[in-house]
Image 1: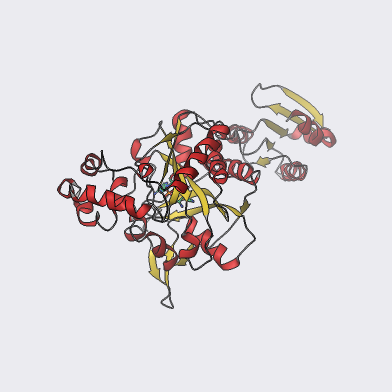
Image 2: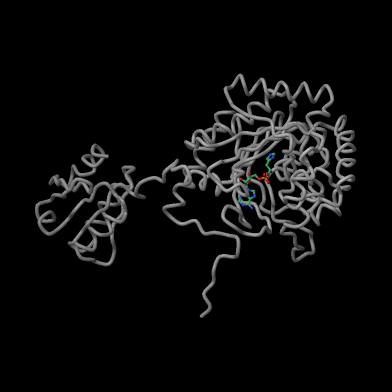
Length: 415
Ligand code: HAM
C-alpha cells in the first residue's frame, strides 16, 4: 500500500513538541489579553478579492496564494496572512471602535520550503482598528517585543521604518522610480520588469543585484510629510518611554502592499538571515476602505510560531514542559485498580495515565519512566490485599506505602 506523507512544506506537530506549542499560544494569549485584545476566529478561506485587493504587487498574493474555485465556481483563497481577514470581519460586523483582535491561525503560501519557511505556517497576531494615535503604534510594537522577552529570547533586534501616507508617498515613489530607472540594468531579472510598477518591492528584494542597486536609494524617512514625520517621532519616543530598544531600518518596506506609516520587524540573530524574521507588522490606514468599509486606521503584527520556536531552540530558551502527566499508575492485579485510581486522580485534577493490556511490572515501569511522570503509584498483589498503594518517586526511587483511601490526598501534597 502507498504510504502517505504530509504535503511538501507542511509539518505534523506531535507530542511533546505540541505541548510547547500550546504553551506558546497560551503565553501569547495571556500577554495580549492583558492589553485588551480579544480572540477573533475567522474562516481559513475567503473570497479571493479580500487578498488580491490588498496585495496585487506582492509575491504573497501574485505567486504564492492557494486560490481555487469551489464546487459552485466561487473564487476563494486559503488565507496567506491574517490581517485582511480581520479587517474584512470588521467591515462586515462593525464592532465598536477601537476594535482590538488577536488570533492564532495557520496561513498558506506556496513558497519554496526550507528550514523556517513552510507552505502552511502559523501566526500569532494582533490587529487594532480605530485610531491613528502614535501611542497605539508604540504599544503594539512593544507588545510584540514583550512576547519575545516572555519567551526568554535575548538575541532579538527590533527595526522600524515609516512608509509615509497618501500625502507624501507619491513624491517618494517618484524619487525611488527615478533612482531605479537610472539603474534598471543592474536589477535582478524579475525587478527589471516590475520596478516601475512596484518600486517598493525592489527595496524588499534580497538578491545581491537589487541590494547593491538600491544601496544609496532614496529613503522613505527623508521624504515624510510633516504629519508622518511627527507621527514617527512620537512612535519612537513612545518606545523609548516603554524601554523598548529599536533602530531605524530605512529599507524596511515589508512584503505586503497595505502598509502606511509605521512598519516594524523583529529579527532573531540566532537564526539564518533568510528566515530570521520572527515577527513583523505595521500600520494599514487605508485597508478598511480598500475592503469596502469606512475609513478606519489600523495597526497590527503577526509572529511566526514555527520561527519563534526555532529561535527558542537556537538560544536554548522556552524549554518544553516536562512529562505529559504527573502520575503513572502501575497495576499488576489485572488493570481495574489502575482504571479506578487513574479516574480518581483525574477527577481530583491530577494528570494520570497507565499502561493497558496486562503488561509486566517491568514493562509498566518502563512506560512510567518514558512518560516523564514524577510519581508512580503501584498496586501489586500485596497492596491489593492490604488495601494500600505504594507511591514511588520516579526521580529519587524513594517509596512510601499509603492507605488506598488516602493516596489521592498524598499525591496532591507531593506534587
Ligand atoms: P508577514 O511578515 O508576511 O506579515 O508574516 C508574519 C510572520 O509570519 C513573519 O515574520 C514570519 O515569522 C512568519 N512567516 C511568514 N511566512 C512564513 C513561512 N512561509 N513559513 C514560516 N513562517 C512564516 C503578515 O503576514 C502580516 N499579516 C503581519 C501584520 C499583521 N501586519 C499587520 N498586522
